Length: 313
Length: 313
Image (cartoon, rainbow over all chains, first blue to last red; front, side):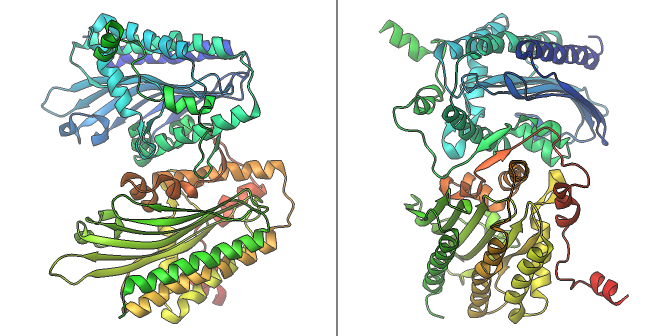
């Protein structure tokens, strides 16, 4: 294969560019600001942030490429035996917090790791995924999101979408709340079961899926009117987002604890957040429906055995 | 000694009562609501929360008494060898988030642990402390806070205040921001260097110090007018408080990960919070002075060797 890092890097920088352009065009207000940064231990990044847009209250779309002399155990889900190897990691990571509570918050990430050890073959793998966090859920949006995710996976095998959909549901659990962060999507790590070009094509398929998965939802909901009370509900729910990211998210914790660039890591945190003691929505309300119906690790495409049984039953 | 748990419990329940009464009287608005709860694995608690008071935006003053069959390693700072023993833990923990940004946020905690193992002597210890997080710092308030803390320690030896003041500075570090959470106070753990009655008296001295340390500051600052822009600064700084509590605070993480009562643990989170990308105050502003002057692990009472040298020099 040609230099794998360069091929991946070219794709990722272009992906960041395309996603920012699409979001900016849709927002129609403030543009992205850019910060490039260097990491003292090696590597750096290109952080792009949009704040106080017309639709987007805060969005970050970050590219980073970092090197290290010792791979942290948290970098690979399944192969702690690689810990301590020299490594490089490249990725694009993004979070969109729209103002309108009818537009969900979205997160996506694609990354490439290469771990080296003198005298041994380098070990490489891809990771990533995308997941959606609605406030006032709409079924057709959830189905659309998962359909685009499933279509991106389809060329790589029928088992790919269900496998990474299930991993996403497992990963984005707020354990102390006993609820998922959102309605999921895809989560994958340690992808090298295919050859390099196929694995890379898979990562690119997921990266490329973000805009077609998210933009139509933004377009459909952006003109839905919202009240101050709905903004308040969004602020309380954003508190859950903060709880997940700061207590459980592997990437966030690894970044903070290993001397990553704090502002690029914490761009994922929502702009305005509330916490209230034992806060819960009225039973039967639109707000209660979020946790009762949407945040239940549903099978949105009706493809699981269970649903097939019910459909046929 | 008489039943140690009963003696400590009687003190703690009374302390909770007295602190709530003093805060409610000062606030003059909303009262505390009370939730008593049982823990399926043993024990329970009495949570008291005041929200939307006249001065207090959110306050929690919690008593808990929990039992377990296996002490988690995080429970004792210095003796991981006790991990796995049966234990009971009693404590009062409180956090006050005032509305007026000229009144600092305050936190205090006192706790008692008893770890048992068949055929061996039980091992007991006390822990706790108090610390202050100003937004618009006032030197006389910081000096007052530390003076009351030092006076509470004085009967137990001249080395006690400097030792636990330094531990507090070390503990409340937001490492990824390279700044302390506030201006400190006291932090202690594993206190059993004295006999039981003396150790208990020390814990009680710290518990009793909270109201005389905090209430005068609240009284002095409660009528200081504040602007929307100052409220915004407070909201951004509260973001740092959330970061510390969710990323680093041992009690919070242990509680959340071990199936504690989520709402009682997270009552410490501020009611309204903001995050902005690379947000920093204007250099030279009152807001910049917080990190430049106040949040620098100062020796507020001028008692360290350094300060003595400077004073005598």
